[in-house]
Length: 115
Image 1 (spheres, rainbow, N blue to C red):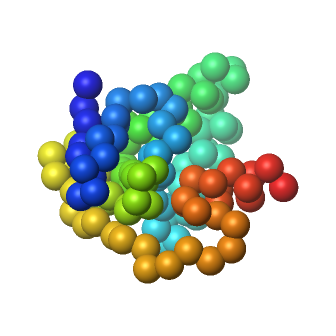
Image 2: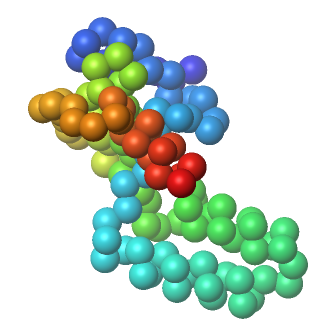
């Protein structure tokens, strides 16, 4: 099982699917390209299952590969990998302060999704 130890010593399991500590970082200029690829895959698909398979390939197997970000639930640090296959993180980000109700990025995202 792939795991990483945060700088605060918390162990993060990277193999959980879906992983509530994992985020895919999508660079703004790539969003339109991704949408165009999904629209084309939908047009060409002969069934919902075929479209679902192509959408999965676009997100997980083909380019653009997304930057992987994991959040430590202990300290809130973000661990950034250039791609999922990278053996070591490219960056570690420590948040400076917490303002408002969200104490973690995942709770902020969950709050937005729930509304």
